[in-house]
Image (cartoon, rainbow, N blue to C red; front, side, top):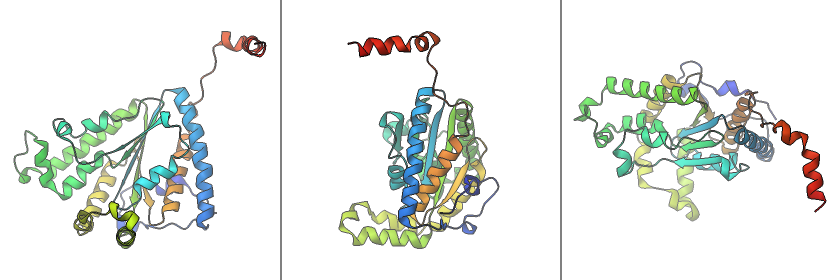
Length: 292
């Protein structure tokens, strides 16, 4: 099986999405890829225990992608070996009435993982420069003081929002949150195939919504918005990774490898040592238990 370098998927300079492939050949069978994924996610599960015991870092994993890109199954398969006490998944839908009474980052801020834990955002704060950019009329529902019509949702508005997102991520990174951002890069043809599977297979019908087809017609607009968002917010402290997503097992393995290869570089993340007094009396504690 072909080895990969996590950096080959990291966005370190401006990209054009139409130039980035949506497939990646690992030179392996599906079974081989799934076996490698099992090995990596087991190591990730062990690392999660260490970071939980260490208690000084949190890990935030942001997953974005077009409809049918595989976000849900990605989360299910990559984090299968995690202890549930150490990971929290948030799936952000249309803002609630309460959430609309706060700024757009509020619901994401209060969902951030605590130190020692992993947090996964299934759809993220980037919806606020993606969906709302394709549908600027949605911004009117935020009741912002300086936005009275769609005409006010202009380039200056988006510049400000990108700066706010960059500041948000810089702030949490500087305070101990390790940030990963994954864009599941799906081809339009593969999305069509996955939508058709939802329609043809009765057990998958529930996943389909007529709105999926309406949004599909806006494919080019979404791609342009994703491209700008990625280019304007991929930073050293919060990098974007473009993940070829036409093949789900390959995408899952790549994401798992990026997470593991990056996290093990944090050499200060180790399990805490016992206090000297406790360590010096280990044999005493053992004898006390064994003599019961």
